[in-house]
Length: 155
Image 1 (cartoon, rainbow, N blue to C red):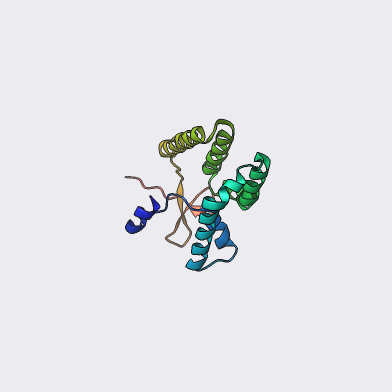
Image 2 (tube, helix red, strand yellow):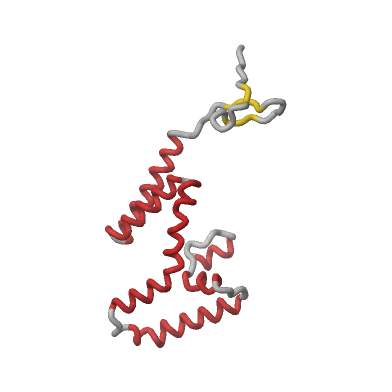
């Protein structure tokens, strides 16, 4: 999907977490991508059978260490909540649904929740009363700026 989409200037469908981690540690050239791809290929083809007898706890710890940078981003949740509370609610609901119900059902909950939020925003749009700021041609929301003059237009 990403290979075909690259010829049409489309957005990528998914990103490689390992590549993102390497890029965040200072890799800046295409050679870094080639080396990381070669390492992943070697691990998948020849070193993969060596991981099979490992206990699940060891494999889970390996995944946990690889995803630790993503888990640390949860501390930014209040910043995101101030920007868009609806998106944070969807994120938390989808996270909980994915953990409790599985990936497939979590995806369904995410799509349904996102569609619900879109419909909710369309049905109840933001509206405000505007007033003209003194001695300017600028109109502001009266809830935020009390020094505005309310303009009444009567026919």
